Length: 232
Image (cartoon, rainbow, N blue to C red; front, side, top):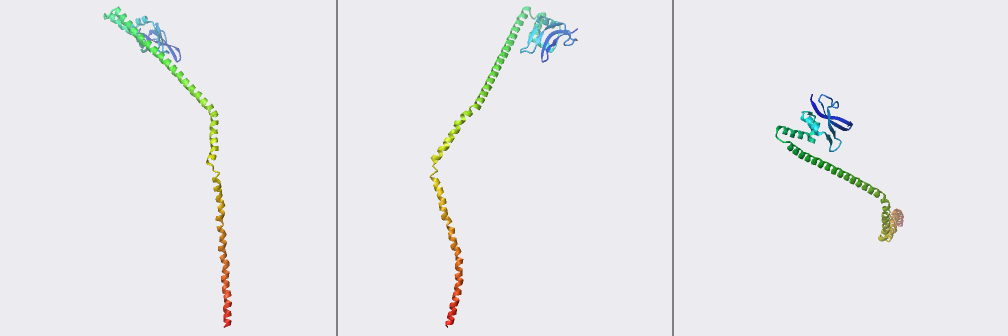
């Protein structure tokens, strides 16, 4: 029977929660298992992992297979590194004291990295919250200014309209166009002089009245000539 360390899915839809178990490789994923080794909650950052370190090390040492996710979790918790050091003791390359010393040093570095990540995430969250509050405050201030701008123009526009009215009243007095108006009115008085020209046109029309005189002279001269002939 091949033993396999893997995850069993629990939790509700969209928020999975896993159990880390050792089970028969032929069993279903969420079926029967041999031993529960811990839990894995990926819904938080960093993820929360609770693991029975000694039992997980036991199953790894006995040659249990591991799924990809289970291998990553056991490596993160140091099970694979501890198993590597224990194999060094079996080969005579290391002593138990050296194994504990190296593993303690590894755990200290790992915890410092995890704490640094947690602090960074907390600072980022605080900064994001402060930026969001600042953005909301800026939006509120902008809205307040818009409301104030809508209400204040009605009160401020009244004096602005009165100033052009006063200036419009003062400009006619300064220009004094009253004196020039009579000059413009005098021009029509001269117009009759120009209209007198047609009065002379009848003189031109009287010329035909004199034409009968020209016709009459021959009539008058004719009897004079007849009188001369009679006198002869």
